Every structure is written in C-alpha cells, then in structure tokens.
Image (cartoon, rainbow, N blue to C red; front, top):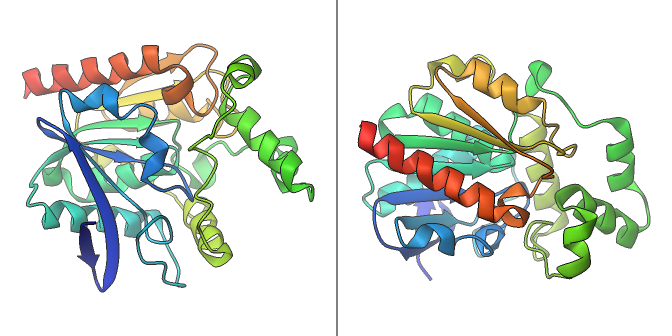
Length: 262
C-alpha cells in the first residue's frame, strides 16, 4: 500500500483510472471508500487520486489538532509524492472545505474546482438547525445512525439500498480522531479567502440537503469569482451517490469544458 509523508505523518493514497489527474476528497470522518460507489464514473477519463485523511483508514492517526487547511497541506504531500504538478479537485462535504483552501492557497496546483454539498463555514455560513443536531446527538446509537442515513439519502432510495453505506463514517476511527475531525470541520472559515480563488469553479448541492443546508451553495457561488451553480433537485447530502446519473455527468461536462477553455 503506497504512502505519502506529511511532516512525519504517513498518508495512505489510492490511484485508479487513466487520464489527467483528478483528486477526490471525501467528507468528515470518512476514508477514501466514500467514493467507491461513483469512482468508476470518472475513471475512464481521469486518473482518480484519493487518500485517507489523517485519523482515518490506513493513514496515521496522531492525537493532535486537525484543520481543513491542514488537510489541504496533506493533499499537497500526496500530489508531491506522485510528482503531480497540477490536478482537478472535486471535494464533497468537508472535502469541499479542504478543496477551498487548496484553490485559495495554491492556485498553481489546481486546474478546475468542484465543490459539492459544501460551505464557507464561519459566521457567514448557514449551519444545520437544532432539530438536525438533536437527531444526531440522541443517546440511542442506532437511532442516531438512522437519522444520519436519512440526512444523506431519501427514504425511497434507502428502501431499495440497504447498504453498506460508505458515507456515514469510517468505523475503524478511534474516538479521539472523530472528535478531531469534527473540530476541524466546525472550525472552517474560508470566507475571506474565497474571492481569491481563480480556478474555474462548479458548485453542486442537493436542493433538499439540511445536513449542510442548501443555502450555502449560492453563498459560495456568489463569493467565488465566476463560479457556476447547479442544484440537484430532490437530493439530500449524498447527492453524488443517489443522484449519480445526474451529478456525475454534470461534473464530467464541467471538467471537460474547463480543459477545452484552458
């Protein structure tokens, strides 16, 4: 299993497909398997690169503060290990927050940028409401896990897709690493940096997402110069999986158009 080294932390990474490099960044407290249901959609056109965030999967799990900006530095360590000078970036959920820092801090390393079900965070972002928070914090673990699934997917989809679901957290994570991931995502605030993003940018979000409220999508689109906005009708947080027949072609069309315009 290949690893990159980020200031002494080993980061497990995975490569599949063929073509220009496309980095896929998953959500909070998840490893690269988040992308398993849809990764093949991109593999015929792109070399897809994933990695396990520190604290997840086969990467090291130091018990120290994590930040979304720090995760962006970890992405660079993987790209450097692979001698990739420039890559397209597709980040979903917390991965979108990580991708924002990549594009803002390292514009020379980012081709096109796709931000899925993401947020600027901080005082300007829209936070999930108290009912959602309570549903996830209830002491009945099975009920809390069911609540998370219903925030990710529609009831109709869940009725015909019993799982396993790759988007509800890496079960191998130690509790301290989960807390570190939660703090990293909660501490994200890219508002002041977003106008400096120069990469062609596509914002994608489900219209029915209350886990990361859909109102964050137009915020990002207005804040990032010339960003495009596409809302996936009826989709919840995991729009990219349940509505892959809509979402993946949207992203592929955008990436191809960005390459032609370059």
